Image (spheres, rainbow, N blue to C red):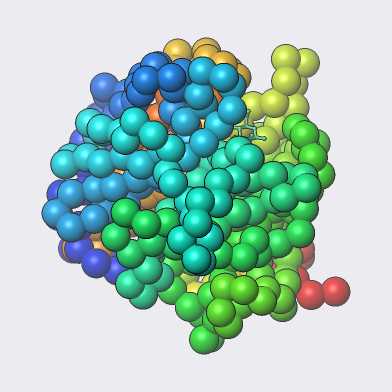
Length: 340
Ligand code: BMA
């Protein structure tokens, strides 16, 4: 029985591998057979990465960033019985408007998938006269209805919380500029209906830790725990050879998630393996989802690797929360409510 509890359903078939004994103090370990999705996984798709999955019935379902052979990213649906071997639809997800008419984004990337009450929401980055956030809902993974774009451009890395907080939907996002943004902090916004968004608050900024000194962005949907919302996010540093994307961790206050309770000064995972260092864009580890089991505390982290592959890594809620707390450094801009 874990000391820190995950608040959520039991997922007894959560993908899992035990921690290797050789691992030196690190709280997160990789699946030995990574990457779980290799190149050219679907006809006319060169690479799948930065993708989100979740339990669905007795199996798993996911929305995948698929870079087509014309270079344009779209979202494809995938299914898996074990969360490791995935089968993909041959066509991109057919988004429609509220009247059921086709309504495809110009491009779509970095999807997140979050269930709130009985509805599944897909949130991604798309063109809205500049890079911003697109959103759709489904209850059956057959029809996918676009809902209003939540934010103005430019914005990316929107992550919905898996339940309403104080009666409102809550979403993290990362306002920035267009292109390969050299800055960016995480903010939170609230909505009573997923149409009107407001009460924007700052959550956390890039930090003076070198691995996240350029920009940060939300990653997987926050996991509710007895200690607060456990957030895996990405942090970026700049080098002579370009950006390096690592995975970081923080714990946000349960009722006021713009307040950061703990923030890990160390990265939790950084590009080290060949599939993380080498690919279309080398040196990228980019978390977009977790599958987690409230009964055992096991957490499987899904991350994009080198803009080419999907990797899987593991931790437990006890191990990760105590590591984040033991290595926590918070600054005023983390711990304040985030309103100025
Ligand atoms: C960001 C996004 C991600 C990508 C990363 C590294 O700006 O486009 O999809 O993984 O760059 O290329």
